[in-house]
Image 1 (cartoon, rainbow, N blue to C red):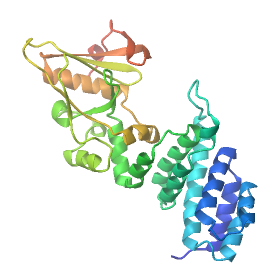
Image 2 (cartoon, helix red, strand yellow; image 1 turned 90 degrees about the vertical axis):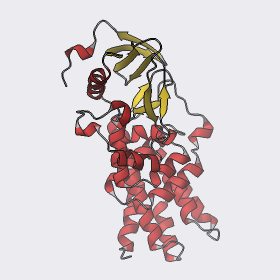
Image 3 (cartoon, one colour; image 1 turned 180 degrees about the horizontal axis):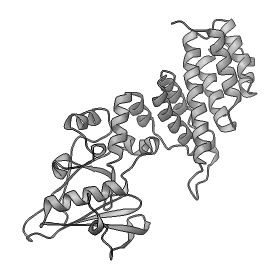
Image 4 (cartoon, rainbow, N blue to C red; image 1 turned 135 degrees about the horizontal axis):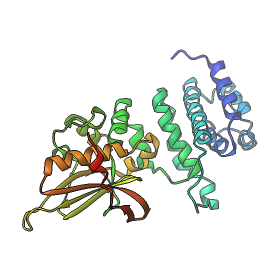
Length: 318
């Protein structure tokens, strides 16, 4: 590998100095465990604690205790950390209302960040670095937001799989009764006139099963009433066919890792998608299925206040 070592060292030195305290703490801790060998003098650890990262890097390189590849991996991490700080600034990221951080959380999960560094050090693709930066920003802000299993899921995800995840996220809905995040199966929705951005081929679903985004076993719901929603509107489905005629709602559930990563891809089912889906289901299952879309006025847990006097589908033409 052809690396300009002096340039990489300068990049790491300059990059570390830019971070606010929280990210600086993470960078320092990770440099300590990744780069300081067992035979390293105690003075090097003291330099890390004082934030003298540049001295440590130079000392390690001069004494052949850090390789060119390790410096390159550190460069990738610094770039992701920079992006994370930018994301925090742009989103004005704050902890959820009522959230407090205890001393144990404030110290961060060292094993988590070690695993994170190990994974992100190999990520040089700019698009994937943005995803990893969103994970880092979220974890620093609210420790415990992303599990180690989620880190492994993202680590094994290709850029193409990440794009598919973004696409399926636009079709992800909240199951009101179970509070799980679901995607209706292609078989249930059927061949439709969906916009291309809302359509996935069977082979693409298979990819999402394989990379740990969707649980491969579909779920069947026989309830008379079934409701799905996003934060703004609620899709209400009701079986009004014969009493002894059952109706099956089929859907896939997102894995826990995928649910945690939804905030990273920053995509979710839009009002437009729900209206389009409602119109398609209404046409396909008439007269057995009654389909309505209502505006959500208030929500708390599984309790909703909706404007059931105005069915948004009545004025919708797909």
